[in-house]
Image (cartoon, rainbow, N blue to C red; front, side, top):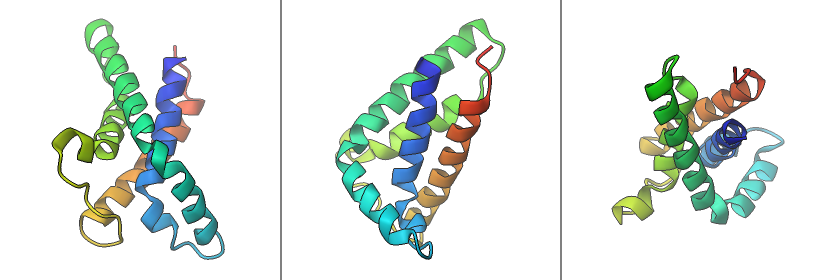
Length: 124
């Protein structure tokens, strides 16, 4: 169940991070931006879930193996990116398609792909 929470947090958190880039998609950009606007107030909850689930699996895989997976690292990164302004008391980097915003958007796309991969990867 925690693995599913991590995968869903990676997908939703990645979507929130990649909104600026996905909004430029032809024909669907406006709908994606509207959906992201509705989801944005709950971004901190997605960040907490991503940090908690990623941290849990990181500890489990560090202590009992087999090895650390990329799902945990991406989940922790998504959680930190979404909670950056709450953790540091500084404003989060503004979304956009240049500079830090582009870096966060690309990381968001990577998080979406990692979350989808995690849904189809067995937990054994």
